[in-house]
Amino acid sequence: MFDGFWDNVFRYPRYFITILVGLFVNTFAPLVPLFKRPVTLVALIGLFLGGIFFLTLTLRAMLGLSAS
Image (tube, rainbow, N blue to C red; front, side, top):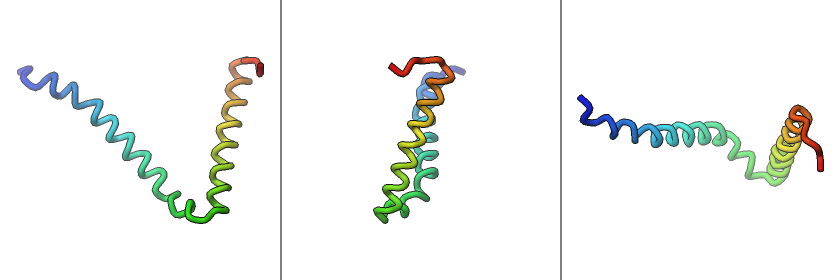
């Protein structure tokens, strides 16, 4: 009854990694053609960095962390 139990348990991390890789590939594959033009590349990088900065400031304000 429990012959393949641990084999199945150790398959779950590999399954989880496969799902995450598939999610990232399907999310970023439509953006690859935009990286071919330098103007859109700079705009996308700026948008990404601006989003990270906005998220950082928002979380600091929500959690009451000081800026220094």
